[in-house]
Length: 497
Image (cartoon, rainbow, N blue to C red):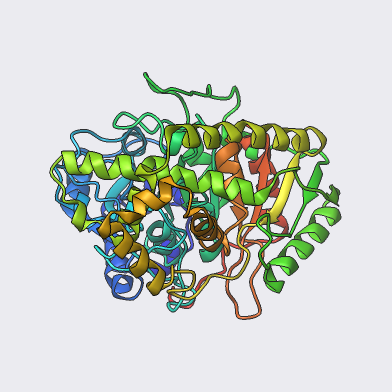
């Protein structure tokens, strides 16, 4: 098989080609590694190559639905035994390697996938862009001056550039859907409890984060969900496997749906004309397919939800930093923004954090009321086309001023006194200005998928997001299959590819 042929196959088709003897796992791995060598200098998708481990896998032989398919996993949560999980951080890169595979890694290996590297992510997976100081920023294959999104930006860049047909990611505030939308891919965030994040972790970001994949086809996403879904011992929340496989559900005839849509930013920030146009064209397509579509939105204060989302950081970041320091890392090796978030988090009272976490229930009930009337909720995935590198970064003067306050010890005192509430609110707004639509699904635990249904006048992808009630991944996959057939995207290839 040559590279153009490889590029024309999704993971499902590559596995079939191996099973039928039309290619071999070794040949596919060589193609993937060669492609990575070609694009790595331009888009930097991989932060840790695992060539020896991949060849050990080849020597053992493969069996299963992904037998022989080259794959990448994310360098966050996806522990690969014997290798470090740096999570985009210089501080974590020097800690002892993982002792055992994460369940998602083990299940992919058991399915026959050949894992040959880990993908780039911002430090502690905290951003909607991928720019870790430790490993350098990743770029978008559609336009290398722009971000591939984050935090699973390395995975998205690798898939879009043709390195692999599918790569693993995780999504705590849009980290699968945002890069999928930036790179012209399918990105599903499953329901809370659908995929285990163990054994090293029980819940990530208080349960807001879910694992999954970025792919070029709906059937690959459905197959991955079948392989990864299902509880493991000790999971705090666990959804049972469905009676019908997700691949089979995705191909079942779709009934007429009631679909709500909204193109206004929930935090009141501007939405780019291209994002609004993307929604308008998708609404028209859905109506042509026979669905009932009308404007509606959940009764939720979007700015309050943004503050609740930011408090995930205030709870998790100091705990992550303290755990790393206890294991031998130096706090000074974390990036300045991470250290600021850790200080603000330590200054946040347990009562305030608990109150913000309790508000998740209010958001979940409000969204459930919408889904009692509508099967699916449609929004843009992004409020604008993929942004150029550096757009949305905190102002350097603000970081410097807050850093000086932190060094003096005043930052913690001011935060405890409530005098930084305005700064915190502004951080929430600035952080989410370009990506305000995705956090709702994380805090409420519902499934949501981004589909590559729109390209801008500049030929940049701009995804559309569909969410459904908790546990309804099958419905989203059915709708995604129908839209994939009506407006195919598989052959849309970025210039770098």
